[in-house]
Each structure stands twice: as structure tokens, then as C-alpha cells.
Length: 167
Image 1 (cartoon, rainbow, N blue to C red):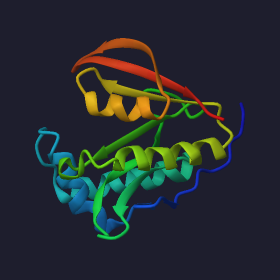
Image 2: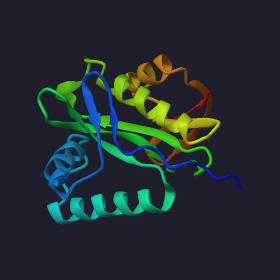
Image 3: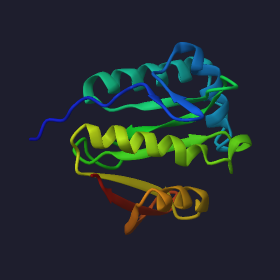
């Protein structure tokens, strides 16, 4: 099995900072997850989720990172690499942002920084899985050079699998 460098857990772009999770992110993460329309989890559950994300980062060397805007300093979502439906050798890029910040290019900007961080680990390819109805996510992934690979049916509906080679 190939060994990879650890991903950088602090990424900066012109407008954004991606950084490690803090317990203080729990309320914002809880609100972001509630926007999905699947109900609101408890603060305790959300803190446990953050602890799981931190633990996963320590064992895998890849991370899902909170995104905060540089000027405003506010938490607007997260972006990073996960194993998800994939493998540690070819992880998935994942992102979710508050609806109030959609349409400003933040997801693309954050994901571009994560792509560069993924390439620096020595990996050769990344994947992504997207609900077939999630048009904004497809736009982000297309801007980043991801191509459709296949479609699968899951409990919640059709899922599109995309891949992208890394430089």
C-alpha cells in the first residue's frame, strides 16, 4: 500500500481560511446540518461529530475543515477530504456551505485549495459523490475538472460519482 503525506490542515485563499475544528464550531455546524431539512441534532451530538472528525483526521491524515471568511471571520461551512463512499488512497472531496453564502464562489475557492492540498499528499486521483439533483455542486465540480464516472441508486435516490486526476 502506498503511503501519502499528511494533508495540510490550515489552508488560506484570497477570501477564506480553512482550519482545524474547534469545539466552538458546534453551534454553527449544527445550524448548517439543520439547513438540510433533516431536523436539528443536539449540541452534544454535534460536539461528538466534531470529535469524530478530529479523530478521523489523526488516523487518516486527511481532513474535512471548517471554512471561515477572512474579513467577516464567520463560519460558512466546511470543505475537505473524506473516505465517504471511497478509499483512503482515492478520497472524496466534500463541501457544504450555508445557503446564505451560496452563489459567491466560496465552495469553488475552498475546493480548489483542498485540491492543491490533496495533490501535495502524493495522491493520484480524487472522487466525489453528489445527489443527482444537486446542480450547484455539479457546477463546482465541473469548474474543478471533475468528470462523471458512473451513477448508482441509493436509498435516498440517484448518486453521481465523479473523478479527477491530480497533477
